[in-house]
Amino acid sequence: MRYQIERTGRIQFAAPAREHHVQLRLAPWDDDSQTLLRVEVTVAPEVGIAAVRDGFGNLVHHFAVLGAHHELAFRMRAEVETRLTNPFDFQPVPLARERAWIADALHQAPRLWDFVLHQGPLTPDLPAQLRDQPVPQRREDRALFDQIQELSAWVRTLTPFDPELDKPVCALPALFDLGRGCAADLAHLLIAVVRQWGVPARFVTGYLDASYFEPDDEDPPGTEPRPQRSHFWVEVLIPGAGWRGVDPALGLLADATYVRVAIGRDARDVLPLRQACRGVGVAPTLEETLSVIPDTA
Image (tube, rainbow, N blue to C red; front, side, top):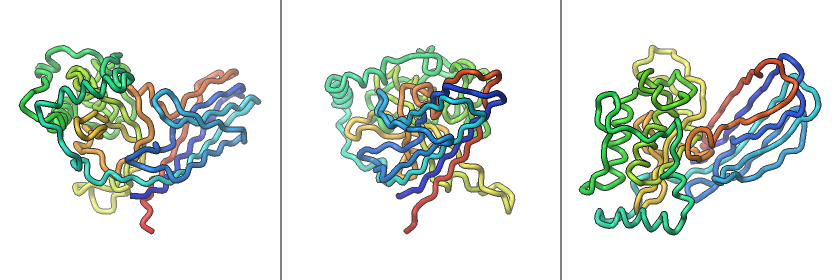
């Protein structure tokens, strides 16, 4: 699949801001599963923009507006080609070798331990039970990829996905008090369990094909498509396959209709916008738009 992507943002201040430093993580990844064909980032007021990679390999655009301003606008345009049409297309490792395969991967790439050992408010060490349900344990008689899919369904049952929520909870226990969560919340819960199994799992932010925002079958006739927005899912290191995306919110495996933008240990590593400035009396407001259009040419 090939997509034309445009994401815009407008930051407004009630009082003049200055020394405004901004980091954007908006551009798609470029790796074996998808190719970033082109990307362009523009800013108004016009300033120089530096493109760098962060510690996780995410493409970051950094710039600063030093003079006083009430408004800052940015636009990211990209073209990307995704190739993972079938997430099941890999040669599985024999069950007896799965744990050794994971151990070998961790030995050869020690930085993978970040995605096993990291704990925090969003991905804490979990108790034996959550909401009176036992937390699933890894089994030796089932392939890990199958168990991950079953675990994703368990997460979705324990904490239903609410598409109207757009910000993750500040700590995972609050998710159980609320009883429902956004896509990022469900991703964090899945990550927390997978890491307790000793398997690397990472948080992913990205974009979805526009078809995911079309009206559902139960919507009344004439219902307009929902506004496109960023989505969040999980990638788990699967023996024989490498990283495979699992989406507990939608109950799907990530395929060519998913466009990866950034990866990290949790949502705090992949914030699309980080900013700091001086001279602001009140918090700035942010308006954003997103358009992901498949290229049918």
